[in-house]
Amino acid sequence: MNGSRVGYARCSTDEHDVVIQTEQFLALDVPEERIYIDRGFSGTTRRNRAGLDQALAAVWDGTVFTITKFDRFARNMAEANDILTGLSGRGVLFGLGASVYDWNDPFGRLFLQTLAMVAEFEANIGHQRTREGMALAKKNGKLKGKQPKLPEPARRSIRRRHAEGEVSLADLATEYSVGRSTIHRIIHGAPENPR
Image (cartoon, rainbow, N blue to C red; front, top):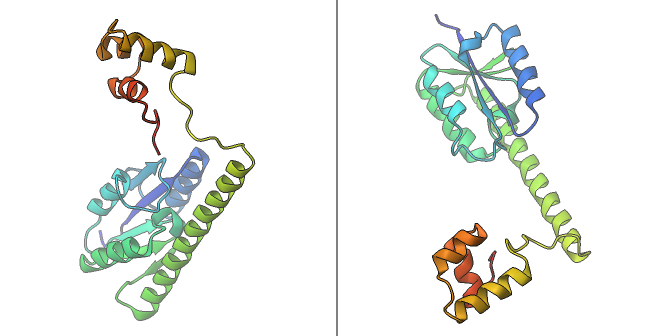
């Protein structure tokens, strides 16, 4: 079964992207049962990506770990290097679309490292733009942060009733459908939603 392919797809939010990636894998003769998918992940870290872990476990010597776009695989250079080194150590090749690369070949390694670098750069630029946009929105009063779970009149009532010994923290939490820690923060004056 040398040359068999295992596919890995990832999407952060757009389900159509998984459909497109799956169609591309099928066109590359990746069996449908050997396509592993992570949904709702940005790709900037490997943590909690069960689909990636399953795909990495499904390859063996002579197979091709296949992706359709590099940023679907990794957007972090260090993790990409670790994964590619691990695959190579197991005799697994890396497929990007129809092309196959050998991590042990200096040119293949350079190309894949360059793709990892570009993917990480694009992710960092996206994070920077998000931070800049949030700072501007905050400056213009359009980003106020997380709002309190309870309105001010309810918070005043909670403080008054607790000060009068009328009701316990647990009872207040049940009555207002919030956690005891929220009631505790309201009573003791700490910010309800600390950053």
